[in-house]
Length: 516
Figure (tube, rainbow, N blue to C red):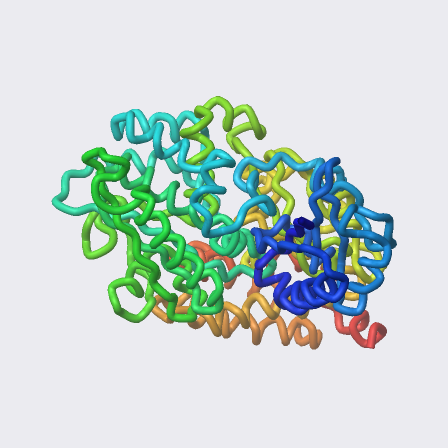
């Protein structure tokens, strides 16, 4: 029996993975070859999708990117036995892009079928939950705290402190909410977890519930992720059937239930309090703080809110101990982060590395530089509200404090690359325009400041009283930073001011006319 593996991740589906699977099955039938195709999670090697792996005595051998037109030639070359072919990448585990990572969260990526509880357990799944069931809530919180895990959604707030606050709060009901409204440009790690390893997210959230005393959880998934929504619903049903979720988990007195909620399609709902408003059936608008959600969150009750990658890191921490996780990283940035390479890049995909890897290593060593072949001009790290890092700072280590000191942020780990053809003044204007469109409108600095920001940048580019308008833009950005209720308005100045600081020549009319 020939055993093939082909991901069901939506990134692969978008480039024809289903068609390739059908073509392979049809060709094998025509050749009277017994074949099984396992639709697994994704390795994250997006530049090789559709990526087909075949099981051989020496291990899995990968081929990609495979099109329907390639299938016959692959069989002719004996690819079902690992035969040589121009699309062969050799043994999958030896592909440098994959081999040189430290995969803790994505350890099962590409190995398991998303909804198989049996395969999940065979690869270490639910070991963390079983350990948590034997510990007190305080002991679980200590493990998470000692690991140094910080929120992977962008803010980098220590997860243990948030969990302890909810644990210590006295209430008749507590909640755990997963913010899966992954709306930042160039990010897809949350989606990969939900589509490829959903039981890991369920395990992490269940551990959070046991730790804090919460008995109900909600996963708020953006409406643009239909595959993730359906997969998470099916995974919840599978976990309940296996008694890893629901009442009296694994015969204990611990109970936890999970529900999926489809997002309302607004970027602002990625902000935790706007997400809570949406979950409660209201318009997604930011709440003023205090009170913090850990004390008065969903329906006014103490609530743990973390994003997908934060919860997904928890099973490893509980199963292997806080030290095993904290041994990775640098400074106060412990563990690993699944970085996501996108934009104008040769090898886009997911790279999980310990904090401390440099931006240049990610963009050049893993990503292979720009897809266009032109020089890198800027890299936006941390989504549409992140700073534009110039190519001169490619040696900067990926670390929360290092990036903050440079006026940038690591955020959710999204990395979008731009080559030297990019107009940085246009990118700065886009940041203000994005804020104007996506603002919930509750606070004046964000709602009005973003619109005024577009107007001021237009005047600067047109060389209308340039020096005065640059001063006005700087003042406006400071007002938005200091006066906005949330990060939507508070961080929009970051890409604007970084573009102005590192690429001032792009804001001069003479240069723009010459470029045109």
